[in-house]
Image 1 (tube, rainbow, N blue to C red):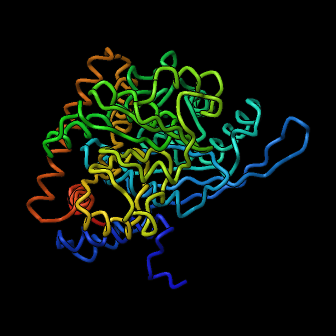
Image 2 (cartoon, one colour; image 1 turned 135 degrees about the horizontal axis):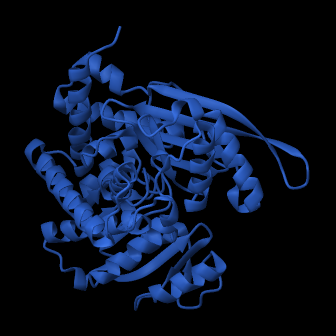
Length: 420
C-alpha cells in the first residue's frame, strides 16, 4: 500500500488526513504543520514475564508521546491482543488535540501492551504492569508523562503503576498516574467522568438541534466504563436507551432497557450474556437501529464507508476514540448527521484526570460536586466553541474540533520555538 494514501482502517493515517484538513483551513505554516504531524517520541520494549505455570512469555509494549508542547504527555495504557504501533500513535495524537480542545495543560500520549488481560491471572497482570513501567521509567513523571487507564486496564493496574514508579523514585508520587483508587489519591467523579461528559455534550447537542431529550431514544455500543455510564447518564435526561452491547453482542428492547438491572448483571457476570431483559442483536446491528442518539463507545473503526449510509441516528456522540473513519465522515455529513467528535465527546475523562493530577500535586481534594461542576463548565464551554468554529468556517464538527485543538497547540509551538 502506498504510505501516502490514507487507509480507512489505519487510525494514524486517518488522524493525519483530518489534521491536514484542519491545518489547511487554518492556513498553518509548513514548518509547524510538519512538527505537529509527527510524534515526538516512540518507545517499543520487550517484556519478559514469568507466568503462573513457570514459563516465560515475552510481551511487546509501546509508549508514544505525540506532543508535549502544552504540558506533560497524557494518555491511557491499553492492554489488548490487537494493540499495534499505529493505533497507539493515533490515540496519542487524539489526546493532544483532545486536551487542547478542552484547554487543559497536557500534551498527548498513549501506551499499550499486546496481551489478552481476560486470559491472565491477577498476578500475571501485575508482573506485566510492573515490568512495563520499569521499561518506560525514563520517560514517565508528573511533569513528563502521566498515564491513565484504558481498554483492559483499571484502577488496580494504575495502583501497581504508581507503586512501581514511586518505589524506583524512593518517594510517594501519586501524580504520576490518574484513574487511581480514591485511597491512593484518585479523584471523586473520575470513574463516571467520560460517560458523564458524553451525556453533557449530547444534552447540549439536543438543545442546539431543538430535540427534547425526554422524547429521544438511544443505542449504545459498548457496556464498559464508558458505554454503561453513558447509558445511565443519558437516562437521567429522560432518554430511553433501547440497546446496549459488549464485545460478545448486544441487547435490544423497543420499550427501553432496565439499565440498573444490566449494571447489576455485569457486576456479577462481566458480560451481557444471560441477561433476559431484551432481544439479542449483533454489534453491527446496534449501529443501524432507528434511534435518535447513537453512542459508539467501544472501539475504533466501527462506522465506515460500508455502513455509514445505514446509520439512522440524528446525533452520534463518539464515546470511543476513532469510531468513525474519515470516509464515513463524508457520508454522515451528506446525511446531515450531527456528529460530536471523540476529541470533544469523550474529553470528560481527561478533564477529570487533570483535576486528579492537580489535587495530587496540592494534596488537597475536592468534593464530587466540585469535580462535576467544574467538568460541566469545561465541557459545555468547549462544545459551544466547537459549534461556533464549525459555523464560522462552514466545516463539520470534527474538523472544527481539530481546528480548535490544532490552533492552540500550534500557538504554543510557535511561542516556544525550535530548539537547535
